[in-house]
Length: 151
Image (cartoon, rainbow, N blue to C red; front, top):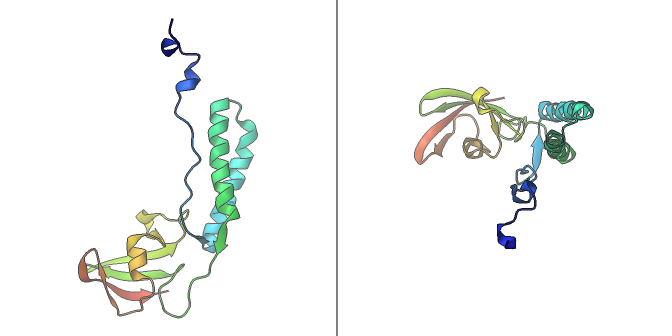
């Protein structure tokens, strides 16, 4: 039989498992973000001895490598206190006339459903450097966002 029609094992044809992708750029974190990273690493390390199945263990170790890397590269950054929007700030906005409050945080802390936006998100980038009263162009609309508070 031709070698082309033989399969030595099923593992030869499995898709490779790549490392979890690390977001580009600096790994800025708030104090809360740093605490979340530390807790996640501790949780994964505590669970490791209980995992005996090989595939689950590999998946768990891959996730642990990701979170250890995120913790090792974390750069704690305090919010600006000068009234200018920056990383760590809580911002009250009017977006197309509708009130919205956001907080600019790191990638791993981001949760848009509760108003925590990664500092690299489009809306976060649009408001960076703005102050109360400014109108900001966003989404192709002039003055679509008004800054009404910075904290």
